Image (cartoon, rainbow over the protein chains, first blue to last red):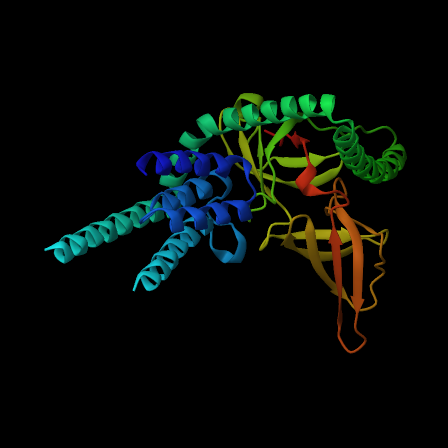
Length: 87
Length: 263
């Protein structure tokens, strides 16, 4: 399982360079569902903001932290959903 | 016992998540930290993009050898993109002709600018940020504030971050961006607001001489931002809403030029 997680994370971080944003969201969803407490998605969100964003700009006035905010919200939401499914 | 261990694990994970969030927020929101980390990322990122491009074009060549139909489709896409570029060039030539006439009136004063050709490593559409990543940087004389143009006189944006061999440009059409422009032959002034991906909106006084197809230029007239696509006039309102956009697909830009500012 650990090997799968590492392989998926490598694919995910690679996709940050080449994939459109909507595919990254899909991969993030898959990762957070498939693996337990997939915090790598937050690191990828920060990496994404460093790569494409900047201080003082970005859509919806989020000032270049879209990746960080979305990844944290996605992770918390999916973990909550997984908890509800288990109980 | 097992419940306590699970709770401890969950608590450890929550602490790790909060720590990651705090570090991420510090790196992204504290400008010196952001600049330092972005510089680190941009030491390797251009190489990765260029490797990806090489693999992609090698794969395309290999596929077209065996799949003629797919090759023709690809060629069709390339030609379509080229037609768009040529249309942009025609607009540029119109502007150039106007400038030549003005220069002739001024009896031979010459105007020129220094430019650096750049390949686009990453385009907007891949991200919600409306930024371009270019393969030129300080080693090529690029500096923050330099304008990025396409097909001669079509201004796209300006450099906002620069590293030794790469640079990031923000599109003028980014959401939240504002720019003074002039529209059409009558040079109707207005403030253009970016709507993302080459789209702009500007409000002009009711009755202004603005029509679909008019060029929208920078105030000094040197560069073209786009072409008017929609003019929404409502008789009861004092202003007219004008929507204009770049006459080419921003997501398909492969090469641009950076106009070096006066140093």
